[in-house]
Image (cartoon, rainbow, N blue to C red; front, side, top):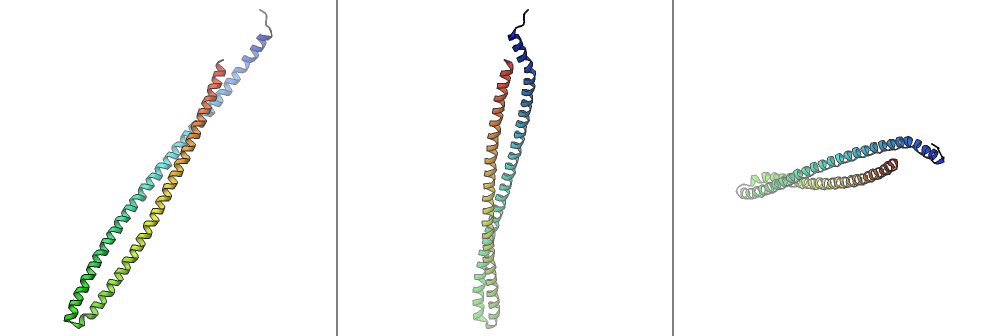
Length: 178
């Protein structure tokens, strides 16, 4: 047999295939590691989003309890107000019978005023707390949405990178097979 220039070229081409295959295998291993890392990051992001959802649920429960407490305070206020009105009527009736009870009436009026001031103060505080909680809930929702958007972007980027790496691998595998 005679070996010609074509045989030599073919022999040279074949001698580079093991190195190309080794390089392709290394790139494939890197791509797999990168894909695994991206999947782990995605899982971490999903865990963070789940944690934020849990916190939102807790905030909503707290807001519900504060609303219940606010309604309870309002009911107490109404009850106190009704009691105060009843006391005032009794004092007026007693004043007709006994002038000496006037001091007692004045003390009760002062007590009622203090209760009303305290009630107004509590209502203001409850209103402020409700507003703060609503603000916090809004902030949490915005954070969750931002995290969700970041996670989706990273997931899409990771998926695109995986697709790109798989396409490169397919081309390398196709080239290697030829």
